[in-house]
Length: 521
Image (cartoon, rainbow, N blue to C red; front, side):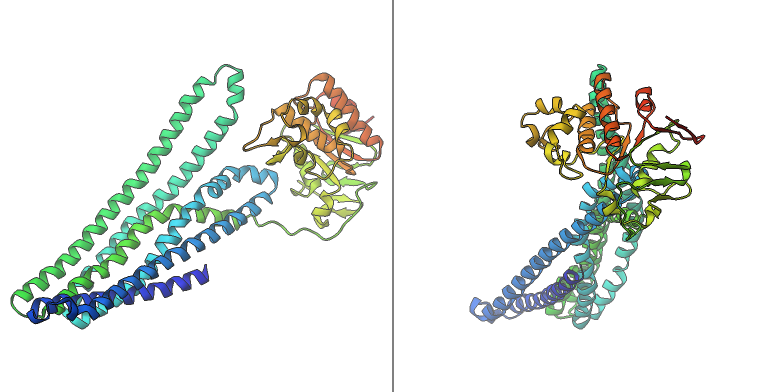
């Protein structure tokens, strides 16, 4: 924003100079027409009118350029800050990501757009107030010192009331952003659960809940607008009273002949220019507070969660032994290791620690004797196929989602082994069907099968599977588990999280987490 702010300051100087000069020229023209009857012809005042029109044109062009530069600067800053937040949040370990996902989604999708009024309205107004207000006061002082004294006495009332109102607005803006985050997260949860509610015949009740959430959001927005309108009214009243005091003083002294008409008109024309920039700052301040609150939250998301730098070492995963201190176990190539135990004992976290996405609960995780923390993670990830508890879909075609980890050697076989071929047959464009926005959606079972196809069709040396047979029927579960065991027999290191007996039955080693009891088959 530096170059845009510098250009905006330059535009503010031009606007201020044109405004003061135009006021002086206009006062000169009007006073001359009134006091000199012989000069009441257009030709006599044509040069002065030409100068006045030129000054107004310059002021208009400078304000237009300032607004254009502010829009470009705001767009660049919002895009850059959004990208930084996305990079920082998506680099978080999954457990931390879940804690800030809703807040980050609100900030990026809606909150940071509120920064546009801050850059396009508030900052230019502040710059103009810092240039035009003191310049106008000096100009009034040069033509009538009494009016300048009145302006200087009345002027501090506007900043005082701006501060008092701003304190209230700041708290309300922060509360409104927090309320919007909560309401959005509840609404998204409700929308995500509609298929389940529909299956249970309870979907009708969700409409009432959505209406209640909408009404709550509307009340929050209206409360903020009420404060903005009332504050604008207070500032307008103070500015009007300040100009009125100057007008009364000038009028009385003109009646008694204590000042010239030119000086009185110049003071009256310049007095509103003293108060107008500050009044605009007050109005734009309230419009920009939502964006400022969102920016504060965005910076808070950036600062404490800076991604730890990746290591530099690389190791071939194929044939390497993965040792997990916390489990007191070696994950061996060519074998299936099943992690089981009660919920919350750290099974999924262990998979994430092997990936380098989270720190192990204790000890170290090494691959061929090299700590995972020292590995160059992109190179390490290229050798792993991961099936999380809820497989991720990205906007794009089915083929692009299947090849998320890289091209599949035999896509047709991978789809058949995972059972995704049946879902694929029902899609309108097959592998070219678009998923996500402007496309189709997949059920939980179809999503699970697509994730399995990614893993089973990849040539990765390490397979990490979190509840691979969730949402599958018994026949398909048997087929998938057979394919997983076959990958281990082909030399891959396979780690599976599971509870059910069919999953445990394919394990060459079962690690019962919590008590760390090892049982081998």
